[in-house]
Image (cartoon, rainbow, N blue to C red):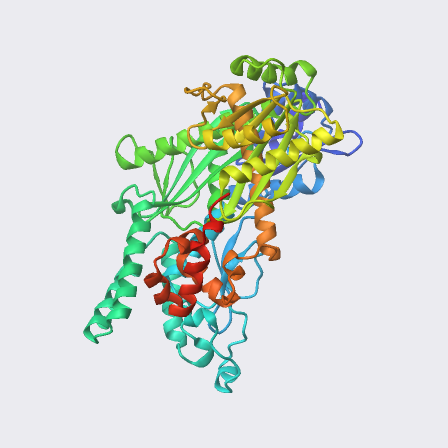
Length: 606
């Protein structure tokens, strides 16, 4: 379609928000776009000088235009999103931000259960969220379980079933984690109060929850129930400590949504901070496709509408870096110049810049499909920075993983030519080490790996990274030396916190520039071994293949072992308890068995 041909139909185009579709001579859908004003947006394709070859090529192929009018900008975005995913038009950049976010669901049932889910079903249940991080949701649920007594069982607690006495209280009741609604020991009204406290915690509104427990504590003290009052006092302290750790900007700010945007060619990056009761409770950064000559104000308006809808925001105020048009008159738009709101905006801007840079570096370091010179450039920089004798075309990295001081495993990832070689990844179930001994565990994993390569006459890596400090590095070298492999490869330690690199025998560490390509690749390898090791560990725990060390003690059963772990969090902590402390938890007889077991000299760390 030529510019003169378009001018003939331009007056017929609507000035409403909507989506437009471009087709070629074969009636193939080329492109789907959204617009606040359809006539203005579509006209720009035929009246502007193009700086992008892609846009120029698109316009050359357009033979037919269709459009759909929608009520609002948000509806335009949703329809555009749906059509792009359905038809995958050639000239559209695929929308990447289509993941399913986790929710916390309060199930519609008697004494509702509360759990994490990714499936939002129209069954009348209440869904809180969504949340941007599964880890954050699990942390919240663990925190809630510590402070609010809600059931975790799947029993059908109908009034009729409870009245018939079908159920008996379980271990969770005896541990104080549940109030026993299955035996009518808790009313639905009291249970509902716990659910309301849960909602407040998830919104970052801990004040009402703390006040509720303070009231209960005073009542318990007045009734001389001092043990109950002490338990409630500990919960209050826990809540106040959690509140102090939260990212609190200012309590007087209340609820607001904060947005910052950064445009880079065809892509815009938007950071969203959700603030409730003066506390940041959600953060999310995403990338968005932009259209020809689309003003940055319009991009931000679309992004705000979509993100507020996705995360179910009801905040009455939106904080933005510049004036925009927004269709909800009851919403206050603020462009701060100073104060707490400007600090929030600056925080969002910092995050959006960081996200853009990380995307750029990730693309640069994702060397698959790149030419040989690109692949070798980063590896050559590592060789130079670490003064290696050869280019590290083959890199391996080791890490240990354990759960609350128990169940150690090791993992190794392998990178060849700067990219993951997943067929060479390895897991190690620790066989020769009793208890938690990070150094001995590392030695075992490294020894087993290179003994296998040695026996199979396989090539050794040029660089071995040990995720840990000097102790783990020394243990790894001890295993390599025992195999007679000194000098076959360069072995370095990577400190977990400072990201400093240690060479054997050196007093001073090597600190690579924070933004250097070499450190970014090393960091990505370290992150990959963390992910691989944690995934393996979680899988083993879920399969029940780990055995609690406490269960190995003659006379200590599974229930007692689980009780001790729930109360003291780790086997390591149980080992440190005095006989009196253990007696208070499990009685004198079992406490004596446990102390005798751990105090034997042969159980010292290997």
